[in-house]
Image (tube, rainbow, N blue to C red; front, side, top):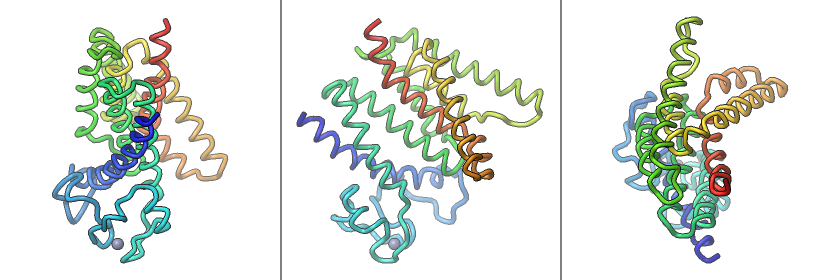
Amino acid sequence: MAAVTIALLLGTILGSFLNVVISRGPRKWGLVESADRPAGLAFPASQCENCHRKLSAHELVPVASYIALRGTCRACGAAIGLRHLLVEIAGGAILALAVWRHGVSADAAAMAVLLFLLLALAVIDAETGYLPDALTWPLLALGLAASFLPGGTGPLQAALGAAIGGGGLWLLATLYKRFRHRDGLGGGDVKLLAAGGAWCGAYALPVILLVASLSGLLAAVAGMVLGQKERAMTAELRFGPYLAGAIALVYAIGEPLALAS
Ligand SMILES: [Zn+2]
């Protein structure tokens, strides 16, 4: 239990680093227009995105500092998005879940890496509409590597999952473009499903697609019911967050199912 508590605290710190990557990554990789391209991805460490003041030591304490400062910069008063708090909390939950499930092990590290990268991809896609190659390609490579671990899906399932997931979605996107003459799915979605297939195995692909499509549809319908038609239309175009969420869910739940069968 001590290990899980330490993982929870350490996870919120990793979550605050992930916030920096989510904020700077799209600018650093040239995906969004920006006057100043950040020098490092997570270093030099955190500063206010608005006034660029370096944060003092106690302001770097995750979760607590956000609540103490009520989500604003102490110097310039700029609002720090609620996303920062949510990603810190999610970071703690991810590392705690991984250590609770696997103890302090390579399998726990693999699970944490997968869920952290999926979290970053989901938030970046929701904020910018991009799934950066700088994250999707490593996620795919790491999935193939992690398949060799004791708790992994095995190299055959991983290779089949990547090929069928990526190839299948690529074919679907190409056909859609051919017949409807517009883009339905992005190349990022193709790479993300290939990575999902590598991490979860080929047999998990139908469930991943089903969960992603249904949750995306539900969100679009909910958006329309709540009268946010414009938001619903944009959400509909961004499949990445739902795909990332579905892969995370299937990996977290599918693991014990695979072990039991
Ligand atoms: Zn500031």
